[in-house]
Amino acid sequence: MKGYLILDFSIKDFSLFKEYIDKIPTFIEKHGGRYIVQGVEPEVMEGDWHPERVVVLEFPTKDIAKGFLADPDAQPLFSIRHNTTESKLILVEGCF
Image (cartoon, rainbow, N blue to C red):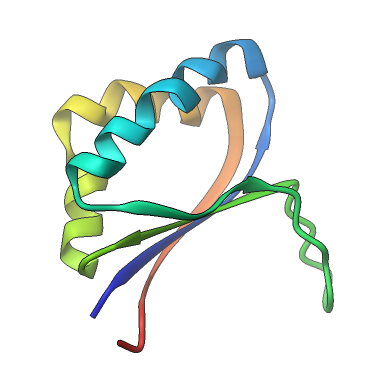
Protein backbone atom coordinates (compact mmCIF):
# COMPACT_ATOMS: atom_id res chain seq x y z
CA MET A 1 0.00 0.00 0.00
CA LYS A 2 1.12 3.52 -0.73
CA GLY A 3 2.54 5.81 1.93
CA TYR A 4 1.51 9.45 2.25
CA LEU A 5 3.46 12.16 4.04
CA ILE A 6 1.25 15.06 5.07
CA LEU A 7 3.02 18.27 6.05
CA ASP A 8 1.26 21.18 7.77
CA PHE A 9 3.58 24.19 7.92
CA SER A 10 4.01 27.94 8.12
CA ILE A 11 7.08 29.67 6.76
CA LYS A 12 9.16 31.83 9.11
CA ASP A 13 11.96 32.77 6.67
CA PHE A 14 11.11 32.38 2.99
CA SER A 15 14.50 33.56 1.69
CA LEU A 16 16.25 30.66 3.47
CA PHE A 17 13.40 28.19 2.86
CA LYS A 18 13.66 28.73 -0.91
CA GLU A 19 16.70 26.42 -1.09
CA TYR A 20 14.56 23.60 0.35
CA ILE A 21 11.81 24.32 -2.20
CA ASP A 22 14.30 24.25 -5.06
CA LYS A 23 16.20 21.10 -4.05
CA ILE A 24 13.79 18.73 -2.25
CA PRO A 25 11.94 17.58 -5.42
CA THR A 26 15.10 15.73 -6.50
CA PHE A 27 15.00 13.64 -3.30
CA ILE A 28 11.26 13.06 -3.54
CA GLU A 29 11.73 11.70 -7.07
CA LYS A 30 14.80 9.67 -6.02
CA HIS A 31 12.53 7.72 -3.64
CA GLY A 32 9.71 7.24 -6.15
CA GLY A 33 7.58 9.95 -4.58
CA ARG A 34 5.42 12.63 -6.10
CA TYR A 35 3.49 15.67 -5.01
CA ILE A 36 -0.26 15.19 -4.60
CA VAL A 37 -0.66 18.63 -2.99
CA GLN A 38 2.18 21.15 -3.22
CA GLY A 39 2.25 23.92 -0.62
CA VAL A 40 -1.28 25.18 -1.02
CA GLU A 41 -3.34 27.28 1.37
CA PRO A 42 -6.10 24.97 2.66
CA GLU A 43 -9.73 25.89 3.18
CA VAL A 44 -10.83 24.89 6.68
CA MET A 45 -14.16 23.06 6.54
CA GLU A 46 -14.52 21.89 10.18
CA GLY A 47 -12.78 22.18 13.51
CA ASP A 48 -10.05 24.45 14.76
CA TRP A 49 -7.16 23.21 12.62
CA HIS A 50 -5.75 26.21 10.70
CA PRO A 51 -2.64 25.24 8.75
CA GLU A 52 -1.06 27.98 6.67
CA ARG A 53 0.20 25.60 3.97
CA VAL A 54 -0.16 21.87 3.27
CA VAL A 55 1.92 19.40 1.26
CA VAL A 56 0.90 15.80 0.54
CA LEU A 57 3.52 13.44 -0.90
CA GLU A 58 2.75 9.97 -2.23
CA PHE A 59 5.33 7.17 -2.12
CA PRO A 60 5.05 3.58 -3.38
CA THR A 61 5.04 2.27 0.22
CA LYS A 62 5.18 3.53 3.77
CA ASP A 63 8.70 2.10 4.15
CA ILE A 64 9.90 3.99 1.08
CA ALA A 65 8.48 7.21 2.57
CA LYS A 66 10.45 6.47 5.74
CA GLY A 67 13.53 5.92 3.58
CA PHE A 68 13.03 9.35 2.05
CA LEU A 69 12.92 10.90 5.52
CA ALA A 70 16.05 8.98 6.54
CA ASP A 71 18.06 9.75 3.38
CA PRO A 72 21.40 11.04 4.69
CA ASP A 73 21.90 13.27 1.65
CA ALA A 74 18.57 15.02 2.29
CA GLN A 75 19.23 15.77 5.97
CA PRO A 76 20.71 19.24 5.30
CA LEU A 77 17.51 20.16 3.47
CA PHE A 78 15.34 18.83 6.30
CA SER A 79 17.40 20.99 8.67
CA ILE A 80 16.59 24.01 6.52
CA ARG A 81 12.88 23.17 6.72
CA HIS A 82 13.06 22.67 10.48
CA ASN A 83 14.87 26.00 10.94
CA THR A 84 12.73 28.11 8.59
CA THR A 85 9.23 26.77 9.25
CA GLU A 86 6.89 25.71 12.00
CA SER A 87 5.78 22.28 10.82
CA LYS A 88 3.95 19.11 11.65
CA LEU A 89 4.45 15.94 9.62
CA ILE A 90 2.51 12.68 9.65
CA LEU A 91 2.82 9.44 7.67
CA VAL A 92 -0.28 7.45 6.73
CA GLU A 93 -0.85 4.35 4.66
CA GLY A 94 -3.28 4.48 1.74
CA CYS A 95 -6.14 2.06 1.13
CA PHE A 96 -4.78 0.67 -2.14
